[in-house]
Length: 97
Image 1: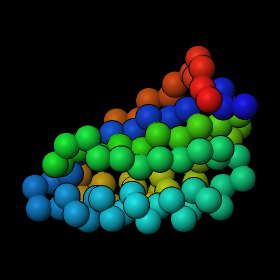
Image 2: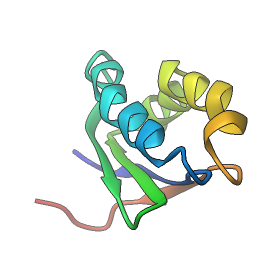
Image 3: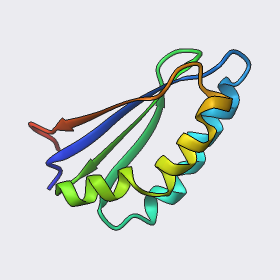
């Protein structure tokens, strides 16, 4: 069951919007390999703001994701692609279908 989630927002540097979009689009392939990640979404909020939302059954899955390949790659590229540090919030899912 989807009990926990992560909501991340990313603000692209001017001129880096397409690179951020491509990065998070391609990251779904890494998320598919994570056994404890139930769902994973990347999305665009506006021209320069992007996001990632993913769900987990247990805290161990969420922590594994936060310490996994996607987070590592994002932090490695953050200063190059983002105008500010990513905002990552741990959330509790109250209902889902």
